[in-house]
Amino acid sequence: MALTPYLLDSSLIDYTTAATSEALRSIDPALKEQNKKKATYALQFFLSILDPSYPGLAAKIVQDLPVSTESAIKKSHPKTFNLTPSQHVLSLPDTLDTIFDHLPLLTQSDRDTLYHAALTSHAFHNVAQLRLWRRPRDLDTVEQQVRFAFGTTISGAVGESLGMWVKRLRIRIVKGGWNMRLVEKIVTLAPCVVDLTLHWGDSQDEREPVTSSSVASLHTILTFLPNLKHLKLAKYAYTPDVEAKLQIPTDAHTVFTKLESLELYDFHWYWQPISRGLGPALKALDIGYGTMISGDEIVEISAKFTSLTTLRISSGVGVRHIRRIVEDLPKLEHLEITNYTEADDEYVTAAIPLLASLQSLKELSFNGAIGSTQIQVLVDSSGPLEEISLNLKVDKEVAETLEKLLKAKRETLQAITIKFSENDLAPSDTLIEALANIPLLERILIDFEPEHELLSSSVDKLLMQCPRLKWTSNLESLVARNTLYETEYKARLERERDEELEVTEDNILGN
Figure 1 (cartoon, one colour):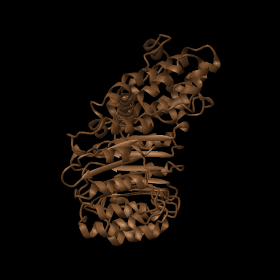
Figure 2: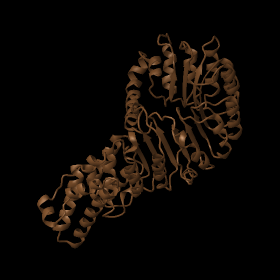
Figure 3: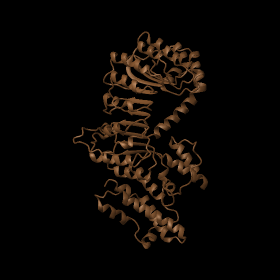
Figure 4: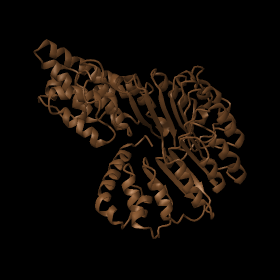
């Protein structure tokens, strides 16, 4: 019943009324038939989305729609109707998507640029709209979801539905799951989606129990997408213990067999079909914080992942689990292990040599506090490290050993994140010059002490010899007040920072 205000939105009703009026008034038989189809599709949308347990709602909606020639003509005469810009786009015919493939759609300004291009001519419009539909904005609110579903439905009246062009969807399921039926409707309208994010609730929602009914809805949503390759399931509202055994469909595992990437936050209660379905196609697996899947459950199926190159684990894994992972997945290129339950010196001492033995390792993120001995193990490793994220102990040798690591991986290193278990590190000119000698370096995220006396020549080398360097607050603390930075680099780096922030701000459900 909570969907009623959104279904009775005046602009949606106005559109249906206007389409009906035009169908009744039109002299041209072809145009008359097209408008009739639009009106029919619009009415069918309303009726298909209703919860059958509320029969009175259908009568309410039909009551608000024109039911005769006379009432329709009286209700709407103008040639231009009260439609939003998105609704104008939604009603346009389908065309070939042959242009604009190279244009990004990462931010709202990117989409605005393409949208304005679509308004310049019929030719630009026809090619731009399909590009916009391929990667629609995040459907973060129920209002956005209703409008998307309505527009997709009526677009089928004038050609192939625009929903057939949608490749990526990001949808929020609200607290209580009362928009599940709407989400089911949306995926039926966009069956060619290959990348789906379902974002269920938020941390401020407090308790959000999982029931067999919500499991059935999840199964329905996923099975409507036969081409799905990339899936993110995130439930941020707290899931209390399941009081009764969940009724999981016997074929629930099948949707996971073709997945190439999977991110889980919570959803451990669905691990049985997930683990059964995942297989050789999987290339990336991210088990996020709060997902209560044990190390034993992970290594039980790790041998199946013959194509896996990316593994991120934020649940408890012991040394024996890491050993098994390294044995089963020797081709790993990106590995992140965040362990909050077992990260003492014995664990770290045993884990680092195992991780360093991965010969294809490009990214390593490990939250256990390591010392200079473990850093030396990474120095001696053969992996072409591009990104490292480590938590270091500050001792008298750590700075020197860190410099050795930077020098050993200078040909490949692109990003370095270093936090310290106690005090931050005092930067030295030799360390800054070691960073300056990494030609592909993009990001410096090392926690340095804010007060330092670096030679301007060291900072100049860093700026001049690392052309791909991006702004970070850590870099700012190193180069602030440097003349070369202030005059030649600051404006560009801050502009690039702002552009990246714009992408992040528009990425509502992707983080």
